[in-house]
Amino acid sequence: LRLAEPSADALLWLGMPGELFLRLLKMMIIPLLVCSVIHSTASLDPKSNGKISIVAFAYIMLTNILGCLIAIALFYVIKPGSESPLVEGKTNVYEAVPQDIFADLLRNIIPDNMVEATFRQTQTKYSHEMVEQFQLVDNSTRKNISSNQNSTIQMVQKLVKSVGKTDGPNILGLIVACMFLGTAAGKMGKKAKPFLDFFAVSTEVVLQVLRWFLWMTPVGISSLIAASIAGTRDVTGTFSSLGLFVLTVTLGIVLHQALFLPLIFFLTTRRNPYTYFLSIGRAWLIGFAATSTAVAIPEMLNACENKNHIDKRVSRFVIPFCVTLNADGSALFITAAAMFIANISGHPLTFGEVAIIGLLTAIASLALPSVPSSSIVTLIMVLSSMNVPVHAVSLLFAVEWFLDRIRTTSNVLSHTHCAAITHHFNRQGPGKTEGPVMIEEEVELIVHSPDAYNS
Image (cartoon, rainbow, N blue to C red; front, side, top):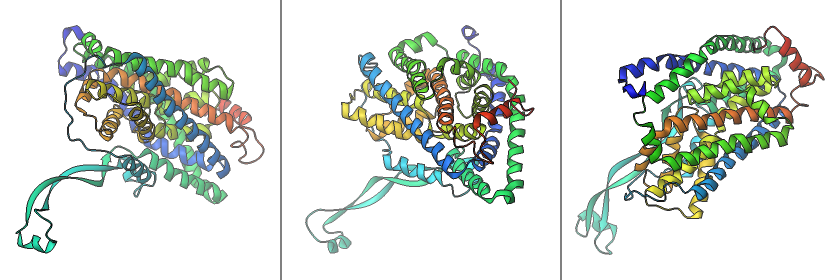
């Protein structure tokens, strides 16, 4: 089909089933997240809830940093972009500094409007303004400025920062707000039972709707991949020009998924990581097709709870938590891409600058939106903070359709690993809700109940 050079209209209708599939899944993400987090948090005592958050966050930081280290190591071995640097001068770019990243993260943790948080989040905006500047000709005092005798006025460009809004749900803020509501409801006991019953039933209703939607998975995935490949005019030429970079990222993702993540999983849970990978295969494929971990949330929950017997109170808290903060595949890509762009722009990096890029990426990945190609925006921010020209970033869009998919699969695998590891370390905690009932016993009831997920 690609050889026939289909028109834009043909590509539109080729990808329409996949687009509708994504819209169906995205439609239910916010209801599922709100209902499941409130209900799951209410089922946990505060001590267990804190332990779950600590274990999950420790895993997230470990894997994000690991992704950066893998990218740095492979970059020095393969050295993509070192043979043919582009001739580009440095340009004036917006210098996104680390404190702005932290400030935005903190602002989004505590949303000022829960309704607005479902479709908008806070982000520091940068703009240039022309301002008047007095320049003294000699050492005269400021009294002379008013007379314009010993001073000149010139217009200069000034970088202005302001706190604004950007489109996209504030998932982190919603999780925190729902945690507060769930914890408060859990403390109120029987008084909050109608409130919790509503969210418990709502969670099951949303999951039932999603089960219906997931029947479209084969058609949706095929449509999305076919439209992406058919829309790429010169696949061979594209991969040849960026071959070493694509090789670096692909090899890094393969090593991360096939070696390092399984090793962490085995050392912490003593389970076979490869059989676990097979059990989350559908979620992995949805992530590959949709290029968004948020879209794969329903299938990740299905795989964790139904196929791997993970306590639903743990999985329904950890999976949305990871979707917000865990992006190790994206961290690997951003680190490798930043070093690649610096090389082809004639801006070789010192080891200290590489270390700073790795640190910035590991931190920025905590606030990475779970939407397609969000890594490109973060990449531009990292390059700007290092004063590296960003013009060459446009080259990456030629292979973004492929690299975005493989790094999303890494994120999906990491999210499900985090749920299993957190469940393993909290077996004795979350099970104690109404009495000394162990998680394993409760899971058996869930799995064999009529309301359990269909295989």
